[in-house]
Image (cartoon, rainbow, N blue to C red; front, side, top):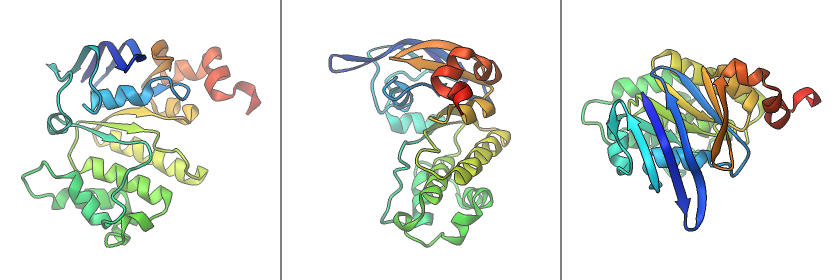
Length: 235
């Protein structure tokens, strides 16, 4: 579904992404793991059109979308759940969801119902201001808002960041459920252990370069990955 070919991204004189190649098959979960500053978020932001690449290609469903505007990329079926959730604090839960569907011309009532079925807690709080929700509820809202665009591919940037362990388990259950319903997922996650357990395939990004790749299971068993990202036998 998504092909990244020799992608380079520079910020001023700094090279953030250095010629990466990766693919995301349809209806799969693919994860990108690595330390802070490795270039993971830059990669997602470039796919989403928020950052322009220096060179390379981004191919989505056979079409070159490199450098296109974000609004065009959303219209083609790619959405991003940003790091830090970025909900509209002064709007209600329902208003936040409706913003997620701003490009759609057809009725969105079914989509709102689907999000509420996935996140019953959001239904209970549909008229509550998003800024008053807990961290976990805001993350649910951020995911729900991204789903309102009816994406073919949803990208998630650190969905478990700052959440309590019990809430994290629930977020990963939702990720699996969204994928089971047919949506392809590209996931960045600091909890490498959980990410690799749900992923069909994974890439390890270090200082802007992919240094390892394999199935989620293969990377979970890889000694270098264990030492660097899973805490090995220390946990």
